[in-house]
Length: 147
Image (cartoon, rainbow, N blue to C red; front, side, top):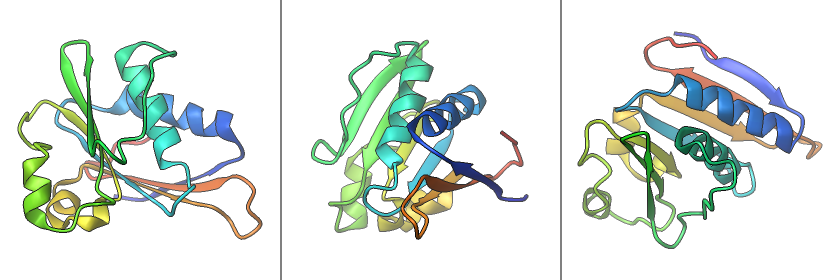
């Protein structure tokens, strides 16, 4: 399975990636969203969720303080989680990320939980290039799906 690399020139390119990603996601997918602060993890998740739900104007706040934001999309659960403030594996268990096997789960700051990383079906890494313009995205589907 090969990593896919994309250059995202602007917010529109990030949104386009989010729509393309949403079209490929399946119930049960666990998506890791990795990258430094300001890399675009929440913006990408926001577009994925809006696409899955079918509402381009849906309010999709960052889950930084709630830790998990749930959504319903065509009969499927979508969970958007942020593990930045998590300090122990027990706290991750309490979030209920694995309670519904058919949920699509998007996780920011997944490196805070080995369990989350080990169960991932999709990993996306966003990096701000040295010049600060755009984003570099690396996408890996465990099962070999391609964008």
